[in-house]
Length: 205
Image (tube, rainbow, N blue to C red):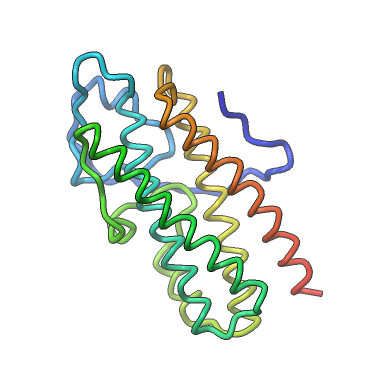
C-alpha cells in the first residue's frame, strides 16, 4: 500500500469531475479525488486482474502527464535558467515514455487509451487551471522559473494524491504493471519535488 512520504507536503487540490456513465459497481471503485473522463466507458472482462479504478488511474495519469509535458516544453522559449531547462527536458522526456507505457497497458487490456490532447478535456488532481496556464505562458526569465517550479510542484503533488487515492480503493493497484508503475510515479516525482524545492530556494536567493 502506498503511503505519502512524511517529507512530502499535502497538496492543495480541487479535482473537478466530468460526467462518466458507468455501471454502479464501477462508480463504487472510482478513486476519490480523481476526475472522470466523458469519453471512456470502463468494462471489465471476467477474471480481470485489474479494477475499474486501475483503468481510470491509467487514463487519468495520461492526461496528467500530458499537461506536464506541455508545461515543460514552454521552458525553451521562455528564457529559463539553464538548470531549470535541463529539469524541464528530463520531466518532459520521461513522461512521454511513461505515457506510451500507460497507453500500451490500456490497449492490451481492451480499454480506451486517451491521447496526449486529453489534458485539455480532463481535470485531475494537481493539474493547472486555465488561469494558471495563462500566467505560466505569459511569464519569461526568472518569473517563468518561479512560476514553473511552483506549479510543477503542485502538479507532482497531485500525481502523488492520485496514487494514494488508487491504493485506497479495495482491490486496486494489485495488477503487477499498475502497481509497479504507480510506485515508480511516487519514487520519481517525490525526488523531483525535492529537487524543485531546492532549485526554487536557490533561484530566490
